[in-house]
Length: 168
Ligand SMILES: CC(C)(COP(=O)(O)OP(=O)(O)OC[C@H]1O[C@@H](n2cnc3c(N)ncnc32)[C@H](O)[C@@H]1OP(=O)(O)O)[C@@H](O)C(=O)NCCC(=O)NCCS
Image (cartoon, rainbow, N blue to C red; front, side, top):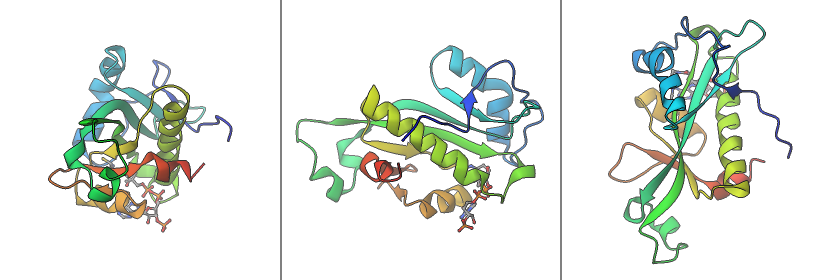
């Protein structure tokens, strides 16, 4: 597997003001907050764009953890009992501009995010799953299509890094 990504880290080059995915929270985040979060090292933000530098899509990644008792029993039984908090990668946001929806770019963004998370987990910072925080039912449906499962008693969904590793 090579390290080719379709996205680049958010920088001042990209033009994000006109980005519109149809969801105000996700629009507001890239318009106003993403650069600050990157500066404060709260999240890393990756942008899908072309030569015109217009933001077509984006996602964010950060380190996170999940309580052992939030995980399904079939995952827990393979973990040493001493770990109360397990390291995961949070794919906090993922969105595509409305003009580009339905062309396979949503899947491209998701695979790009999973690849970054997986490579970091094997090369630098261990992580046993990718966790997402779906914004609504439509987002739940999207992630379910890629085998993310809902964590009990939580709005979050997750995919084990073992499963992710089989993609690459
Ligand atoms: C979710 C989103 C990224 C999907 O983008 P997209 O361009 O429609 O995705 P793709 O064209 O790559 O579709 C890939 C597959 O997912 C399916 N899909 C797309 N959106 C879906 C949804 N909401 N529910 C179920 N399946 C969905 C497509 O039908 C396609 O399946 P197929 O290959 O079997 O035909 C996009 O709709 C978006 O940005 N929405 C607003 C932001 C959002 O809700 N983000 C979710 C995380 S918070």
